[in-house]
Image (tube, rainbow, N blue to C red; front, side, top):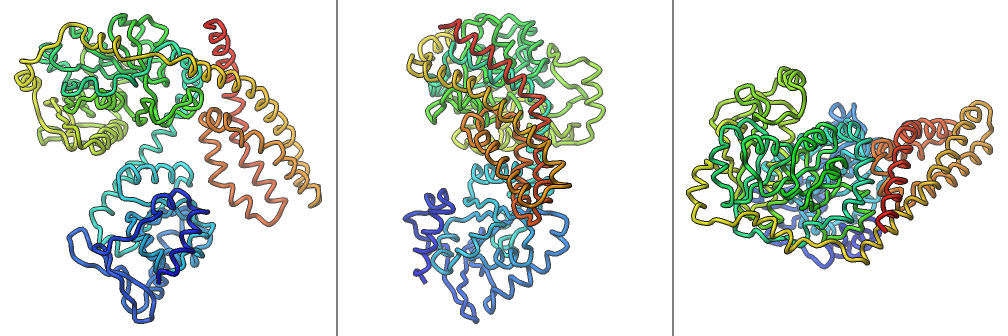
Length: 620
């Protein structure tokens, strides 16, 4: 049966190069998979289940017939969706049957176990299945990181109604994995919706911040050189929740016994309580965050910023600004020329997630939460001293909150969807960092999975014998945080100037595209087939140099990802359309949101790029 392996691997190398790299040179674990042959001669297998027993993946008589019947049973379940998350490739029988019966469906294929795919590559010729154009994406692996990345990419490129289909035997063999996968899909769906809302809400702010903050990135050191400098020191990540106010006296005692990190506007409460943190972390792009920070004097308190932050915050005087980056910030990654050696954090829904990652990067392996309540304990929104928004706005949000979550004492707290998504993001970070121990010092907040209870007084008793000198963290910054060398700064400047130059070409190209689209309306009514074909050829000549340009993809593509995702999701349907008049009509309809978004955002990008170039020229 191994005769299929070579052909399958050659196919994967060409069509799925990342999967090929993952499995190249590997063989399946014979202790986990037992080869078998069905009565009709087709290869099947038994696998070791989560409970340690053996489970056959298929009918021992006719796996193809079994798969056909299963596919037929899904008719009602998938009738209202175009896109399917298909969990469980196995030896390909179920997917093969599904693709044949539902040729109009787009499939996001996920196989959790590499060994299963390795076995399948030896047993069957999989090329005809995996080359099917209905397969939009193929992901493999059972780590949380792999699952999150796959599901996020699926949601970003699929229609809104994405339906999960899992092969029945996978639920029998791997019930825990499938249940976790279902929960992850639900969480990612909520997070994806939240991200789209965030993009829509803050797109103009990000256009300003990510461009203009490039100048601050050149003027300040990154946190790169500080990796591990706080090894063995506990970190206290302070949020803005009501429990902070309740524990303020205990927190004050811990100054110089732990690394106190203020997440975002919790610094407002800390200043009111006369507690000076060792580090403030900020990332929020909006006006509320800007107004909050302009009221504070932070000249000598270290400030770690992410370039998404409101550029006005960085104009405030501060002697100890340092920065890190978000993994989803494509414009900054492009302009700064980021590599794996740079401090790149996972983009999170809450600044507390950024603060936690900063603590981990600095080497803290004990991380304590206070003010991380993710609910409304005692019907209170924030700690005293925190004024994000007007009181009536906060009260309205609280009154509209109908969810309930388990609190640390076993009771229930009122909460809302945004807080739940934020808490789940923190729980994912905890899961992905098993080398750290996480504690929750709140006595009133929501329960955070995989945290241990501890009071700040108990923490003080444990750490009181170790005391650091005043401004100890400032001195670490002075010692280890270094600005970029001249070669890298010159490379960054060159990319900025090149993007600025190209931006004029993009604007000219889009204006040409607008004029070309105006012609289409008349042509779809009166033009002959040859004229319409010429229109499509000319469209390609205008569109391709724009969309294929690297700087457009990374910078402009970020700000127009909603519109471009809409294009991507529906592009294949347009290409598959046989009637050329209909094809042109569909294409114009697909381009309309992009054109509208362009008119809104492109002038802002132009203004901010002009200003950035002006600043860089002044800096010399």
